[in-house]
Image (cartoon, rainbow, N blue to C red; front, side, top):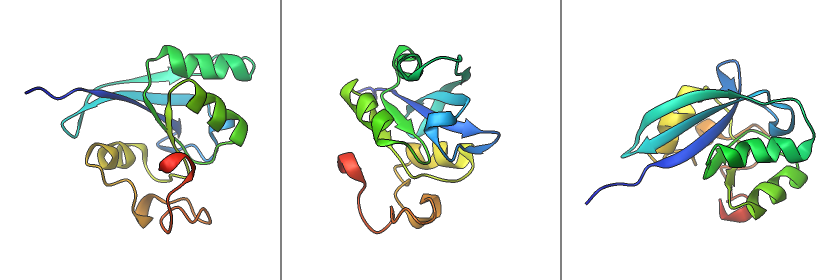
Length: 126
């Protein structure tokens, strides 16, 4: 029985999670299978309006977006396009990617300060 790869995007700034998706310039897009990233590539956002930012994420085939803060506007539009959003995450991109693959992203270590994320589930069931 084979595992299905999940395509995840992480909004990044240098080697860390971008503090706000709305203004992030890059995404790390990876396919995760059996807890490991099997492919990865860096995608730079092309300048444009809010619609083009959402389309760029959708066109990558992303199923899950991991980010720091995100406005309700972007959050709702991404959800409406079928993308699961895991907000209020902080940390180094590679550690976050590994934690996602191991299903260990929900602890205090990756909770953005002040978000209260580790005490309760975030909006959208996360």
